[in-house]
Image (cartoon, rainbow, N blue to C red; front, top):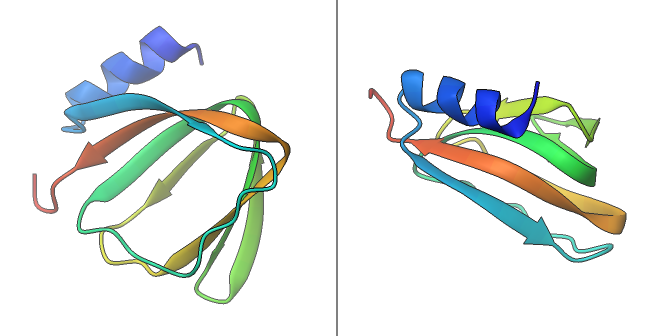
Length: 92
């Protein structure tokens, strides 16, 4: 799916806050959560998400979703990553 089609699909699904985010190589976060739902398309690089005791790596062209309140940690690959991210308020 290309970025324009993904952004259109996000908006149709109620993900009205949309932005492209760039992440530095090997950047990692501490466990945290967000007060909004997330759906994102990896445009470049890779991202590993650790949530609910499981780890999954997403690469360019792959989509990931996370519900509001889900505690997770993020680890970006050696080339960093660029993601097209949509946020939606719970219940929207």
